[in-house]
Length: 453
Image (cartoon, rainbow, N blue to C red; front, side):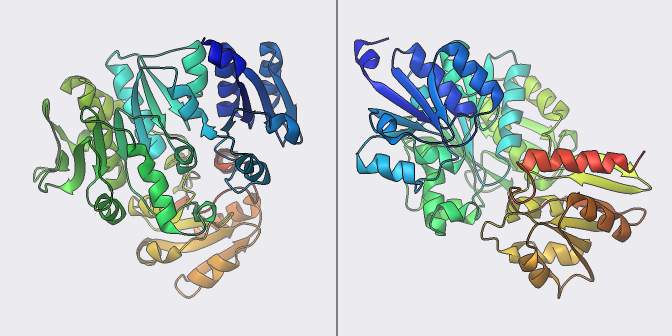
């Protein structure tokens, strides 16, 4: 703790996982800490704040207390144009993310992952490989315990950090040792003035501050990444992956359907059939994870074993049940069109597709060819399904308009036959009918399992 820290005031906005962790780290570093949440704080966090003796408020923002801050640590869920943030900016008070704050107080290795789709799977896969190899690695960012809390109370040698564009928005001096960009497709454009270029720039902030000793892993064939790399320079060593061998590719599939990994210190081969995760998108996720592990000096055998026994991520192409010959799949984490595209690509039987929720400016034309090829019926599930009905109505023989999960399940049962798949892959955020995509997925699984009773 420095004398400078003990005299400064940190205000934390938002009392979720990241906010609580930031408040604890600020307390431990000797700051004068205050936490403010305009909503209701979850009991588990309220109780822990009280036990820590951290001053807080909920249900409103007391602006004089907030504007007395030397620095603000903002929850990623608070938009940059929220009135409280505009007031803070008007006072020229610096606003940072929890990740930025935590990064000041640790020298641990940072493996950071971003992208529009596949972040959680790849993050957890990298963590699984490192732990399998005996490395003291921990999850942080959008998964696991907040980075700030772990830096304060439970430090580790390596952090595998899933980063959303919202977190990257308020990161300035933080540096990744290994940065991964899986893909970039339209998402969250409502937070970026509906301008794709703003969203892309946010994603590429993951490269800032990287040095010659650092590494950048990315999908070589993503057109958005390729275009941005023509405008952005990085000192980091570049390790692209691709479906087939291309000049400079560090990972690819060879003619014998094997994954090939080629890094400065490793040349490794693994049959694609041995991967635990199916689908081309998961091949790419496995490539990114394998390259990251190679750079962490994990042995070839440990990488192969971990890639072959990984159990997957809840709410991502999660098998739920087989009922009367119909497979029910929970892909509630598919909150954008591109994520649904990958789910449909993995389907091998006629599919009844559940779409709907809070639209984020979706362009459904990306999935239309796959819908025409694989989808026998669409069940729209949301408060307002007009956009889905208008777009897909001319292209799908059967389409249902439902406004509750129960009604959606019944419509799926009417459409699906023996040998079909029912796929919940909504393309949309969950907040019109559910608390979160996790809540949507859990309720879906519970309702489906009732069909077996």
